Length: 217
Image (cartoon, rainbow, N blue to C red):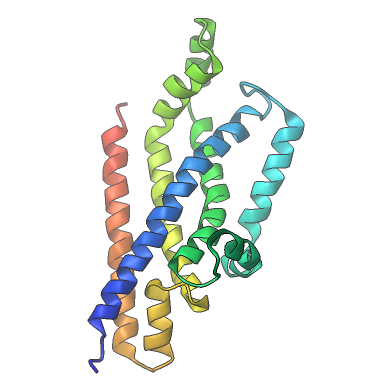
């Protein structure tokens, strides 16, 4: 058997990409609206609601404060309920998504808060609805920062997916543990590290390029 099982390495690579892509998409689709709610229920927001803002903020902070490995184990019953198993790539997507949603929600909230309030007030003064303000002002103006924040979230998910390999989630982390650590196969460990570095570099470069493209200021 070769020191580096390239077929397993390729499979593990695609498993990591799948986990990161799917959980990243879920975190964007659900995290951005949650960030909008956190922003607009805060004092001075479009529909300020202090108690709702505090409640949502507390939930978001609670999930963000948990180390991923603890969250991964704690969510095993929910994972089994949703996908029917607690191991494998599909199962890992559940805790990865739940960990990433509140993280990206806070990132989006910070990005949206940086939008010039004068633009918001100008649109509202012209009769723009709350939906119009969000669609035409908040999101477009914050888009470069939202893209950059999403890039950081994807990089975070790659690290978390590798950690999930410790409990049989598949991917590069699982390969590193089973073929590298447990079998004392240093070339496998080195190969996994190199692939992870290249994957993170590619995502960061792509995210930075996209952020520049959508920045029309």
